[in-house]
Image (cartoon, rainbow, N blue to C red; front, side, top):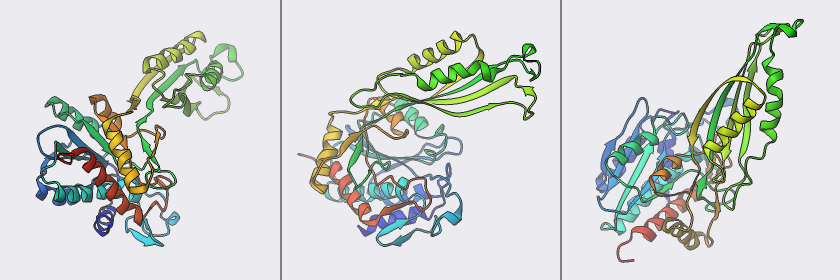
Length: 378
């Protein structure tokens, strides 16, 4: 569909490095405001958040997306300018092609098509966009949801346009995500000369058994929807840079990607028990980036699978893998949340790309979902 391709290219030309929107939302606003969408900016700090809603009655269906992109990295790794979209052999190249400006374009065009055919649709439709999903997200969807919740604006169904597809468009729909629990640990020792270890306390040596236990522990066995919980150490730092000094402290960063088979508190308690068992002196700070969520057997998922069956001939495989998404802020409100978008094989890489044909196909899929949920007298 030419309209969606042209809109994708217009968005990709905007250098919207997180948390800069670079005018992307204004392009979307100009398309949807004439169709009866009310416009509200929910900006916090440097982050732009745009809430567009059509209708006041329930149920409320929301498209959720982000206009920000990650930096392109070394330009010599790209075969073309990352912010000048280029089509080669039926594939659109450029930063944001898959993550996720093609999804946003498909959402907008799908809304235009649906409203043209069903101007008096059931319920309400909204589009929520943020400019800080790729960064900290501290002032993004999480803050917008707080505003909506405070005034009892309840979201019933939310489709996140994150790139979910693996081999072909629509082969995977994410019905949940693992939780993400971050930790920053400082193990305290006593600095001294390496020739006099009896006068010092080496935090590296003290922590070594705990490191072994942390990285080999079985935290849970997962369940039918989630793989087992995993811990990964992302950074270890100690020392003064001198080869003859025992360091006075050790800093460790690690992360849990956890399933619904375990709780945040369970993980914290087990880690602290391991540290205490070794008699360590330590400081430990936790940050919950998001709790696990799961959507199963619901009307939204049925509408998605029906649209995929109609348009590509088969339903998608349900999956909960990958990192986190802004869906983690919507799910706790009680909304049904799924993620469906383009191929994810090139996201965050040089030469990020999306097949041109998939952009038009995504419009048809999104439009089909709207019809399945909100077409009057269905």
